[in-house]
Length: 613
Image 1 (cartoon, rainbow, N blue to C red):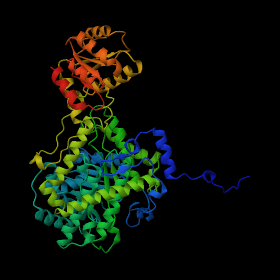
Image 2: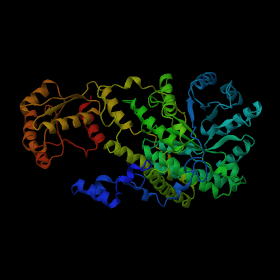
Image 3: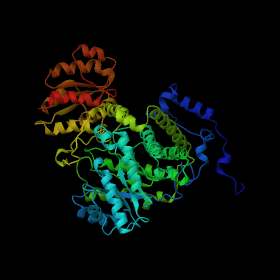
C-alpha cells in the first residue's frame, strides 16, 4: 500500500518543455508553431501557448507579499474593494435622495457630478450621509474643478469631518486639453494645483490630484499606453509640485488614479499589478518620509469604448469580466458602467444590474475573500512583467520628450492614442476584433433608433480636433450603418442561393448571413436548390436586392457564371468566398466577393450606397 503522504503527481514522470514542444509540433502536422499558437499582442510582446515554472524563476515580482512594497500583490492585506455608483440626477436634492437610497442597497462609494460647485450645493448633496461608512467622490467641468475643491473643503471644515471624510475631488486641469484640444498653460496649472493641495491640508483622506487615464481607455488606447501615460502623468504631478515646494508625502498622498478596464481579461488583471509596482518605485525615488505614500490608490471603471447600442445586453457580459479583472487585481474601488449608457441616461433597472455585478463577485464568488489569487500564476506573472516593460518604455520616452504635460500641450499623447484608436476601429471593421452582436452574430431583426435618447453632455465643444482624443466607441461605425438601414424607406433583402456541396453551402450561408446582418438587412436563408435557375427564380420571387451564391470553391467555376448570367442584373450578385478561380470570374463581370479578409465595414458601406433610398 502506498504511503498516505505520497503525492499523486509523483507517480508521473516530469515533462520538459522540449518534449512538450515536440509533441505539439507533431500534432500541428507541419504547420508553423509560432504562427499557429503564439499570439502577438498590441502591447508589443508575444504571448506563448504555455507557461511553466522556469518562466518565472528569475522574476523578482514573485518574492513580494500583499500589503508590502512594491505592492505588486496589492496595497492591502485584504481585498475589500468599494462598490461605487455614479449618481445621475437633475438637482442636488434629487441626487441626495438617490444617494441615500442606493446606500441601503450595498453601495459604499458615491460619485457626484456637480454643476454648481458651492458650499450650499455640497451640503445639500451630502445631507444625512455618514462619512464613516461611505466614500464620497466629486467631479465637475475642468474650469470649475478648483471651485469644487474649495466648496468641498469648506463644507468638511464646517461639519468637523476632517478625520473621518474619505473621498476625492476630480481636479484634472488637463481634461479639457485631452478631450477638447484646449490650450493650457503648464505654469498656471502647476501653480493652481499647488494651491489646491495646500487647501486640503488637515483633511487626511481627501485626494484631489487626478490621473484620469480612463480617458485613454475610453478612446481605444492599448493597455500599455494607458499604463505608461498614467505613470508619466502621476510622475509629472510629483516632479512639478515637489519642485514648487511641496513635500513628496504631501503630493503622493493626494494623487488618485482613475483608470479604465478593457475586456482583455488577463492583460487587464496584469496591468493593475504592473502599474502598482512601478508607481511605488517611482514615488520611492522622491524619498518620502512615509513609505506608505508609495501605495497607488486606484479607482477602476469598466470601459465605454466597447459598449454597443445594438444587442446592448452583451454590454453586461463585457462589464462583468472587466469588473472581475479589476477585483482580482486588488483595486481600491470599481464603477460598473450601466449597459444602456451608450444610448440613454441609465435607468433604475440598469443601475441596479450594474451594482449587482459587483455584489455577485463579492457575495457569490467571494473574490473579496482572497488577496491577489493570480499571484504565482506562471501566465499572469509573466504578463505583469511584460506589460511593465512596455509601459516603462513609454514612460521613459515621454519623460525624454519633456514630460507628460508638455506632450499633452503638443498633442503628442492624443495623437498616439488616436492612432491606436484608428487601428482598433480598422480591426473591428475587418473583424479582427469582435464585438458580439455588432460586427459578428448580429440580431438582424433588432431596431435601435427608437430607444436612442439624446442626452446633453458638456456644452463646451471641441476647440482643436487635431489635439483632442477621439472618443468614438468601437461600434459606432457599424451602428451608423444599421441606423441608416432603419431610416431607409426600404429594408434591403439578401437571399442565400445555397447549392452544391452541403457542408460548404451551409457554412458560407451562415457566414454571409452574419456579414450582411451587420448592416441590418433582411436575410433570407435556404436549405438548398437543385439548380441555379431554381435558386435565382426563388430570389426574384422573394424580391431580393442581393443574391449571395453559397457553394464550394470547386463548384464556383461553373455555378457562378451561370447564376450571374441568369440573374442578369435584376439584383446585386455576390460570391461567398475567395475561390482560386476569382480572376476568371471577375473577367465574366462578377465583382463582389465576401470572405474573411474583407473589410466588412467598407463593403457594407458600399452596399448601403447602392441599396438604400
